[in-house]
Length: 340
Image (cartoon, rainbow, N blue to C red; front, side):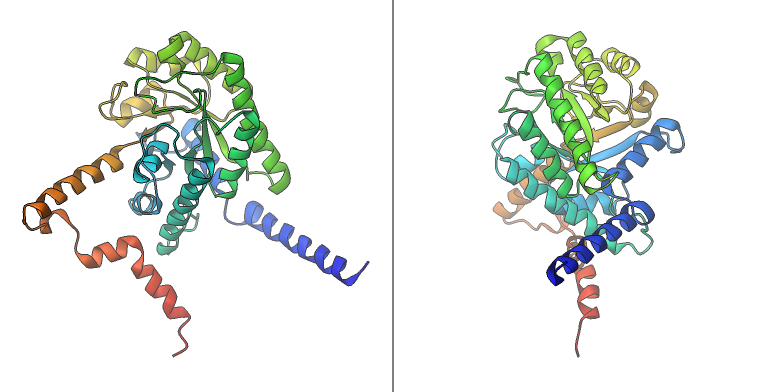
């Protein structure tokens, strides 16, 4: 064995030891943290009257705010990521642009966790919007693995025809039943393949979404969700149910963790979190609350500026703004490396 081969072998051994320590005996990976959270909600060991609440983030700052507010998990919304880049949610952003957003979200969650000395569990997990997978089933597999490398705990894959759009707007359509099932199966295979390469618990959990209720009816949507479970998805999401009765039937007929989408002024009834849990939902996402609230605040602030009026009542003190974006933690870290 040459010296270079020997050194490479030692390097690989060290990498495997580090990976084993992190995943087996130390801090859990994001998918592991998400799975543990879901299991605790499903088996009743999570003692909370509400399901897992997921305020949705779309960049590093919104991710930091959610983590600092004490939520257990978050969801990276494609609508929000599109919006902050100046586009509607009609899949105008590419795979790479969404990966970049996921990286910023992961960094925001990590920085928020580092600020809390009592945090021994690491960053809160994030489920990221993977849209249609950005192509065919092979593209969907690449998307799952890319989101895993970006540090996401889960990924949502849906059955819309590309280019997809927000599930609560007109003009959406879905791929055929069998194609939808194969897309989800490909995502599940990618999850498992990633774990074969990088260790158990590293593959992001698969949230399989169907939008077929609007185009093919409620029963078709139920059958799709059932089929998604059969091919191995970890969670399901029936988008835009139009009544409490549909929400109840979905939860009673489909096994496993289920997501409710609480889009204000959308097509689905907005219910209190405890009612959603009573119905059978495991998670409740709030996809546009933070985005819409920030738009409203910015519009009001702009109107004040335009009219020459003070904005003091609309903004935070500068010291608090600096802390929220990370200056406090940065200064603490910077001081550790001072040579003076």
